[in-house]
Image (cartoon, rainbow, N blue to C red; front, side):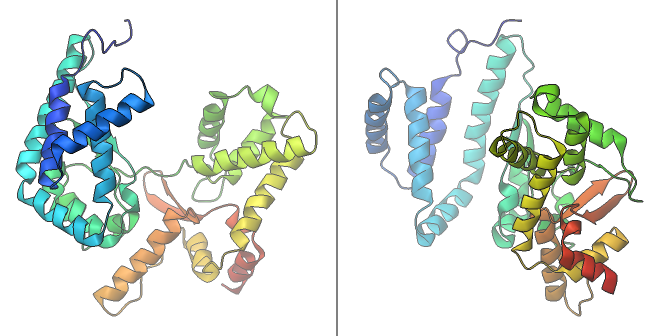
Length: 335
């Protein structure tokens, strides 16, 4: 099937313009002025890109920057949008329905999948407004939508998102070891396959054992594996090596470990997580202390110091590189 050509079956530009201009009017912006300024900017950036669709995108970017203004301004805009949330939802759904029709006309599935990333970075109060107070609106978009929720909210008993959203999924770390500590071959193979899909392993690594070692030391975190690969190739080049060998790989792990050592981590708590393979039960007297304890453990998960795994049961462990730090080993010995 040939690729989609928006020139043959374009998305109705009026649908996007309608949403953007509605948003501008509700945020008390001068729509005509915004349109004129956006057209000038578009003309200056790229000759010919002054169509309604392109101008609407420029307007949306301008409005987004305006929304990031003062706290008072954000609060005013929030109140206005809450008053007209149903109207905004209807206009956005018209836009999504239009996109689905374009896909269907091109012989593709009309089912839209929207991934809204970075919401997991929200602090507790705005996250509760988004997922709890307004969660019903998020579920009414005409498409399949994935929202990334903050870890602290997932751990919190007070903020039960399961009562708002029909389905909840946890994306655990790739399991490179069993709960017992034995190597999990299938997980390592999967990480090696990820790297092999993007690079010629024989040209990049001195042996397959090198990439497996880096995959093991990543703890199953793809982000950390990418960092170890970057550090490994940088160190190999500095030594005039054409491939990442075991020495370069170990030096990469050491460099990451030194970075981790510069931060004062709660090593005693990490030792308990490593031994129990679970997050310790918070010993707290009131609800505020419980929430603080949950936020504490959520912070460890967000920073990748503690990793979550799943294999029929949910369990946790400390990042393999953290386990090489002398302070952690001392905490483990002290029990």
